[in-house]
Length: 229
Image (cartoon, rainbow, N blue to C red; front, side, top):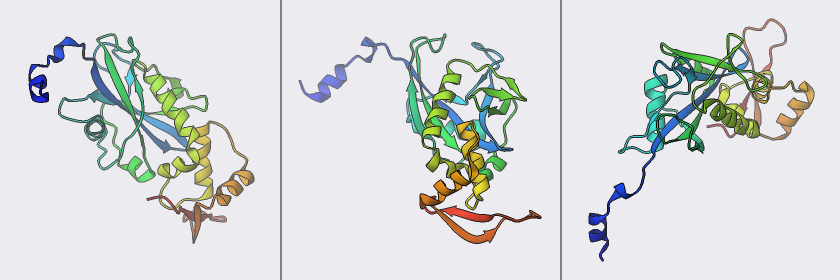
């Protein structure tokens, strides 16, 4: 049988077809804390709980395009590059039907955070040192398996923070700001001299010879990451 004839007679309904969705974990820094963008659910299931911005993948788009659509339509973010983290496919993860979701991570620098305008029913929840997700110091209940999605995404961010930290910083930053990002992501304080020595010895940082403005005493030198951009 020729392939054209095979495809013409092929019946896709012979097999069950689960739905495919994407969920976006959008991290940024705010007031020295790691935050994640969440949306309130106003329909069942999990009515009233918080969830990651997400959507179903359309038949005419790739998961990457669906993630970009979510970020544009639900967060107002354009030109960001979502990074695939993991596929979550537990059989009972959604009580409605069989849904497999692909998680994407986005790291926002301070300029993107300023431009970010959470809409009605959205919030920037903080990530506590323990990994708990909170709003105004109160724990939030997340719908579906979204707490696990945030947890795994955070775990992988922690594993690569030496390189990933620069995506959460402005183009020019102080060593103090770099340490602040590392501490917020790792959830623990770091020894200042040891941290600075380790960062400088990596060879990724370049001192600009310029200093931060707006500080009365001993302004810190601004650095750039050689490999950023």
